[in-house]
Length: 255
Image (cartoon, rainbow, N blue to C red; front, side, top):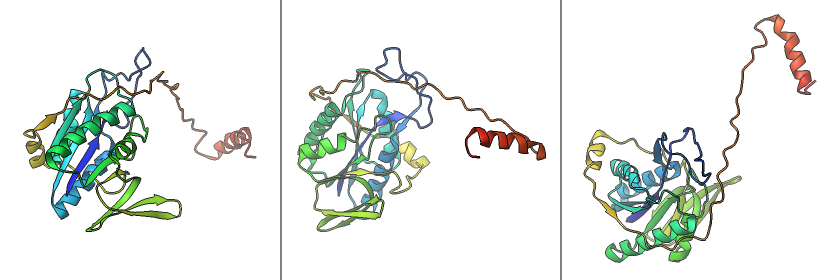
């Protein structure tokens, strides 16, 4: 089984996000970064598959040189091969540009080592949330794609995958090679062991320069909403609180 997992370097959840004065980029000066959560689950799922069926997990990211940190983390939790498509322009590529760069990289990797049985993306990235890149890659490679995946079964005939819907699950069956958008919750990602962390420092990272065409989507402006400040007011802790509570309920139109 040969699997490719595409990951993205994103601000750590809970970080305070500030927009630069040009209103086109995020100020990263004091931000911590991590792998997008859906993609952490994709990596864990790939690691579990090769533990059961054998094979390799290639982890690919398109981003700044600092994204090597996310590739080394992937090495500590089950990744076996690592690819960086550098983007040190200081500006995020649009989905079209990103997909084109990934497609070119995949074509080269498959020409050298054979087709990937599965290509996994996160259902959507934690920052942009565009849902586009995985679908664009699948269409360009002429491979079936299903997003929102919460379960994968592998048989000789191909793959059976599940995704949640309001009434339960939708089930899809198709032969490989295929592209899947993995959703957080399909598994619980493992923590890196000390052995894994030490091994990740020695992991070899292949750098593939992008010759992708610039995308046709233009970022116009990032808008930072006004910060909401909430206050807690204690109305009382005894029978004296009854009057203020009634007044508050009346003000809210409950009474």
